[in-house]
Amino acid sequence: MKKATAEIIREYGPFDGVENVGGVSFDGEQVWFAAGDRLVAFDPDSGNTTRTLDIAAHAGTAFDGKHLYQIAEDRILKIEPNSGRVISTIPSPGGGRDSGLAWAEGSLWVGQYRDRTIVQVDPETGKVLRTIESNRFVTGVSWVDGELWHGTWEGDESDVRRIDPQTGEVIERLEMPQGVFVSGLESDGADRFFCGSGSANNKVRAIRRPKRSRA
Image (cartoon, one colour):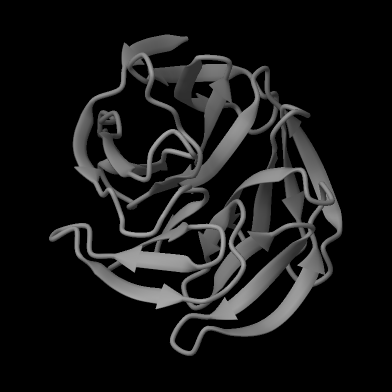
């Protein structure tokens, strides 16, 4: 297993009126995060807030290329981002105990915090398709270039880790500095992960994604 200290390359916030930063997603232009009673978007270049949707947003956030998905208590909402309209809902697999959320390969991937698992869910029905075990409390979840990453937050320690999607084995860990925690997690598809900070403060942090050697 590879282990390194996470390199924080930028902090965004604090954001006015936000007490908790939960799920985080990226739509190719804006970073979205769950702020309890609303979804907030900001420009990752300027750091300026660009959008606010008045919608319940308690945990993980995801984007499928067209729609946002948001965990709201015991449901997952499918949202049209331009209007903020909720198109459909499915039950969340943890019944309100869910954490992170990601979109990949036509499925939703939902973190189950204290169960230390990530479940693959049918986005139309909510049916659980499979379960991946981890060995730490799971917060944010992200797929990038076929790699499965998730955040952890257990006690006073937090990290971002890559796991084998078949076995759950930890392949790589990026350890956050003392007192810095990860709630939501999403990649920009390139060299950054965006990390929520939970209730520790109302910031989003960008950390560097490890480079991969090219053939």
